[in-house]
Image 1: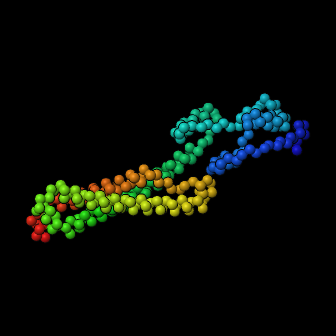
Image 2: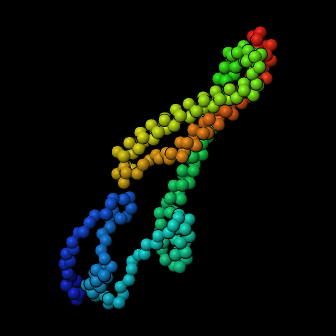
Image 3: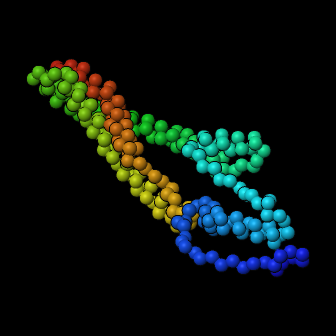
Amino acid sequence: NAMPGTNPAKLYNFKNVGVLKKTIGEQDYTIYIDLNTAKKLKKDMLRFQGQPASTIGYDQIKVITNSIADTLKVAQTIKDMGYDAYSNAEWIESMQKQAQSLQLLLGGIGSVALLVAAIGITNTMIMSIYERTRDIGVMKVIGCVLKDIRDMFLCEAAIIGLFGGAIGIVFSYVISAVLNTVSQNGFIGMVGGTKLSVIPPWLSLMALLFAIFVGVVSGFFPARRAMRLSALEAMRN
C-alpha cells in the first residue's frame, strides 16, 4: 500500500528466461535483470518514496581481480577512498593459514613415517646381504665387477620403494574417494558438491619418484657393504 502523500504502488510482471547454475555464493539468492529495467524500477521506487529521481545511483559495485593478492590490494585501496569493501579473500587467507598449520602437523607425521620406512628398507637390504653372503663371494670369485654388485642391490632397494610408493598411492586414492563420498552427503555436498580431497596426477607421479629415491638412498649403505665384502670371507660364511 502507498503511504499518504506518495504515488500509488505499481505491480510489475516479469518473464523468467532462465535459472543460473547453483553455486556456493550470493548468486544463488540473486535475481538479475537488464540495466535499463533496473534504472526504471529504481526511479519508480524513489518516486514512490517521494524522493527526486535525480538521486538514483548504485548500492554496490562488484570488482573482479586476477588473483587473491590483487583482491586484497584493491580492497584496501577502496577502503582508503572512504568506501566499505568486502571480499572472500580475507576469509580465504584465514583458511590458508589454518591449512598451513594442518600441513605442518601432517608433514611431521609423514616425516616420522618416512624415517620408519627408510629404516625398514635398510634393514631389509642388510638381511638380504646376510642371507646371500656366499652368493656375493661366488660373484666376486668369478670376476663380477664390484660396481655391478652394488647396482644390483640398489635396484632391489629401488623396487622396494617403487612397490611401497604404488601401494601408498592406491591407498591415498581410496581414502580420497571415501572422504569425497562422505562430503557429498554432508554440509560440503549441500553447498555445491565441492570435493574435500583432490589428488592431481602430477602429485602421484612425484610421490612415486620420491618413493623410489628413498629406496635407493636407504639401500645405498647396504649395497656399499655388499660391494666391500671380502670374497674369501664370504665363501667361508
